Image 1 (spheres, rainbow, N blue to C red):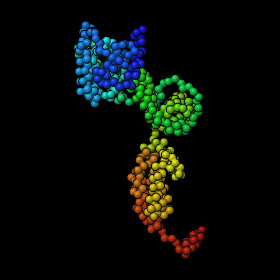
Image 2 (cartoon, one colour):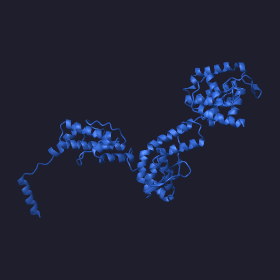
Image 3 (spheres, one colour):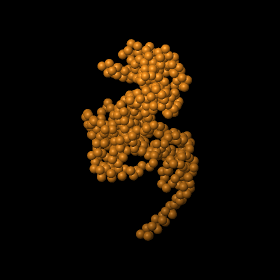
Image 4 (cartoon, one colour):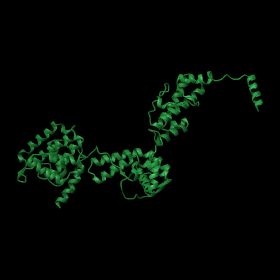
Length: 445
């Protein structure tokens, strides 16, 4: 009973300690032990006054505990608390530190649990976090025994390194047929299902998917920093990979449209977070995809693999550019996504008026600038356009006059128009020439 009560109480205190700060000193280490075992022992946090041994070898004698602790933590402080080290160097030095701390064994009980929490705090502050739940208890005991008897800390360093959170491992998606990303397996969603058209699905994804990706990443970081079970962390990693995957929910909505599906049944409501909404939409898309015939699904996947949009374009950007061209100037200014783009058009028109251009020329300049800005929106480029200069070559919008390519918003453009359509145009016919031409045309009939 005492062992079970001790386990429950120390787990609760350990969860609290993970969110607290304990100085990296001998007194801070004693304070950590006191916090963990304050519900069990009156002497929690106090150096032991009795001699203890393991396998015939004694730990540090009581009179030397305080001195050895001060010496060990002073050495840690001199080494910068092990910060700024590579992963391998950090765990090598941390293993040595824990090995020395184990040899001192300053408390009558609870030394192992205190050392594990202490190691996790050092690793967290040094940028190499450890998950205490991932430490193999059997390997820990073997490494402690071997290090105490031989002074070799490499076993302890290996145990701690194996429990580290590997930040360099990218989330791995759960891949279905034809490389389609799938959500992690879970119980069927509960709640009222609503029929949602695939057009509405894409609107929802355009609105909520960026925020859902951010929430999924933050959720994974929070689980990794705590003591969450590995299964829960793996679930979060798969979910993050799903919302980031090229063949994720947006791709799947287009795939179902190609297959002739018009709507899906999804559990959605106004109280859902962006991640929850995308999760439910993704589940509904997955149900429909899994119900398709394999041959039809394969043909649809092959068709969608053919490039439809030019490189750099995306469906959401295409729709935003079309909306910019469709809207009136006031509507664009009222839309936070398009206000900056409309401001560029207005600035170009104002510059043309200040140069004394005619009303027709001002309108032509406005339309050319609108086309240029729309192209920038399609390709996701910056809208830093100088209305008084010629834009970069890849984004030059062609003149509205057929078969004529002119520079935009420049003097050369204006002169080219004049030369081609005024100076180079045929002379108008006189009335007599026109009358003669008409008689000649009638005679041929």
